[in-house]
Amino acid sequence: MLWLALRLAALPLEVYARAARTPEPLAVVSSTGSRAEIIACNDAAKRRGVRPGMPPAAASALASDLQIAPRDTAAEEAALERVAAWAIQFTPAVSIAKPSEVLLEIAGSIALFGGLKPLWNAIAEGLQTLGYAARIACAPTPLAAQWFARAGLAVRLHHLDALRLSLPGLALEVMDLPPEAFRLLQNVGATTVRDALALPRDGLARRVGPRFLDDLDRARGLLPDPRTFFTPPTVFKAAQPLPAPAQEAEMLLFAARRMLVELCGYLAATASGAQRLSFVFAHHGREPTRLTLSLVAATRDPDHLTNVLRERLERTQFPCPATAIALESELLLPLASRNLSLLPDAGHQEQAAAQLIERLRARLGEDAVLGLKRLPDHRPECAWRTCPPGSKDAAASAAASRPLWLLAEPRALGEDPPCYEGRLSLLAGPERIESGWWDGHDVMRDYFVACNPAEAMLWIYRERRTQSRWFLHGFFS
Image (cartoon, one colour):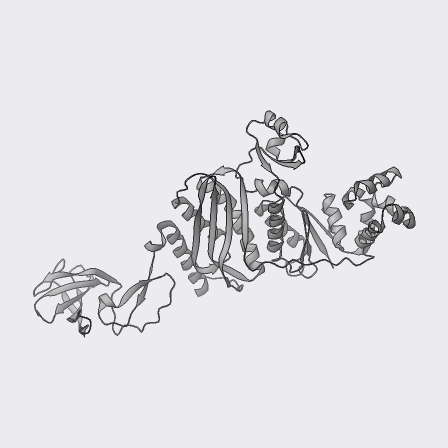
């Protein structure tokens, strides 16, 4: 077995900071009883002199524009679960180690990704795209990988022999010991794992507890260390608090894109695609603003989803700045992976057409972009109707060739001879249509293909009730 540990050391800060497009001074406050103190701050705040452990009032005095947010442990747990769901695209064996670690068993995934280094880089780049700065370590046991990640050592140990040589040099701080046990070990001069292993086991068990020895054995692979694997939910939900109220489309899109990347990782892990998504933008003292993205075809392409959302946000008027964003998948469909071809194929063209339709609907409105569906009716004006884009056309093909461009209303051309920008020459016809007697809109027409002096191809007809009257109904070219 081979384990990869992801430690999100700055998770209390990143649940807010990952939604900020520009690094404004930001600090997270935790309250214990009546005392409140800064537990994390970003680099912009540190440059102003803000430090963890500082009271919020003192921090605000150093940086007047400092944004102070309360620690949200529920948001941290939800973020950790979303990272775990995103990581399942790399391996199905993913485990959560609260409060800030995710473990991946990757022995079966190395060959799929072409080696440990490409897999490592893909995970690291993906986490950076999500907005998390993770410490990553690889070891044959999950606990050892956690300890190396806590120490900030990006090791890549494949074998137990290498692990047993490297593990003793770690400081005991990585073991997350109770304060009393840590002080006891320090008093006897034990500051590293090597020092602890050199002490008598019986005495350690009596003074520190048997769990300490069990952890040492689990980390070295001498005891089993079973982990509970994470199961992704059937519905994707994500909530993102904003560090400061925002109303501009680009600022909201920056935060929403990272949520969409998480969503697409979840979709890849579950072999599904999103066809309808719901966004909710919360406001102070106002009803939330809701946006629904209805897609023509299911997809898990984050760039395409981002482009569609951008078009919708630019058309949306918010009553006031948003304070948080929530995303929920309303309709997910199975979406298998497909092989990519060297040249564009029919599947690629169909996908490109669907994406174009979705962007047009997002920009112009759903009612402005429609599809056409044929109906089994000989009358040209009754042989079609509007339908949602992408709907399949099950109607039979027309009996004769007809132009794609029909006029909304036939245009009178006068009597014999028919003229349109010059005298028309009849090339083909007649195609006789007598239909509609049952609904009160009966027609009796003879249709012809005609050409004018400019060689434009027209579709004209003559009313059989009045043989001398001609009408223009469409254009071939």
